[in-house]
Each structure stands twice: as C-alpha cells, then as structure tokens.
Length: 159
Image (cartoon, rainbow, N blue to C red):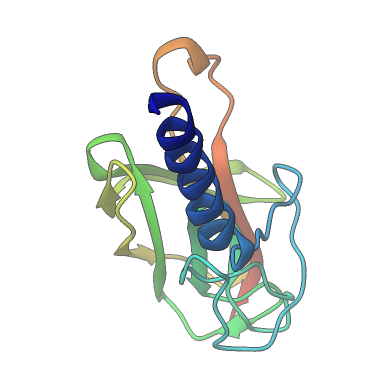
C-alpha cells in the first residue's frame, strides 16, 4: 500500500501548489522599462508599479523615484529628492547632471536593505536650470560590471 499513499501525497502537494499559484500574477517588464498604471496603485507584490512620467512615481524593479517628477518645475535652490528602494546594505547611489557641465552632484543615500523596500530622501542645492537625477543600486558580486542596477531617473527644472 505504500505506492497509493505516496501517489496521494504527491497529488495533494501538486494540487496545493497549483491552487496557491493560480492567484499569482507578475508585473514583469524588461529591465529599464516603465509602464503606466493608476496613481497610488500597487502591483501584485504590494510594491509600487511603474507609472507614467506625468508627476507620478517612476519605478524600475524595486526602486522608485517619487519627487521630483519627470518634467516637473520645482523652486530652488533646495530640491528634495524622495523615493523608495532597496539595495545591498541599504545603499543607493545618486547622480545629478545638467546639460552644460555634466555631473553637478553625486553621493549615496540609505533606503531599504537586502530586498526590504524602504524610503530614501536627500537634498540638493541647485541653481536655476534643467537637471537629471539618477538613483540606482550599485552592482554587487558577479553582477559587478559598473552598470547601474534598477536605475530610476527624472529630468526636472529648477526655477
């Protein structure tokens, strides 16, 4: 009788796994891509989904850029950059560039660590002009190619 019992257990296990997976969906996208969703909505994982650049969060993988929005005009000279993300030991890298002189600021900010999403915030002091802010996870281990991982960016104007 061991065969029918084993077969019953395997069948029950597979059935349970099928039922558990039936309700799962994915919001998978190509790395670096964004898609639109309703403001304030979340994907099946409960994390923010990629959204349009009309003042809504910009998301790539687990990282998002909340403010400033792409195309936004903000008053300066102090600009606060906010978002959510995760990286090894919670360290995200940022870089701010302008069209004329290239990199105008760069550094690190703390967010969630090792898969746990957490908020980040940093302040910039910028003259009037148009800038692009980029935030990403530094590559680690075998991925250590120097290429940004889950980069989010927005171009904005300081008035």
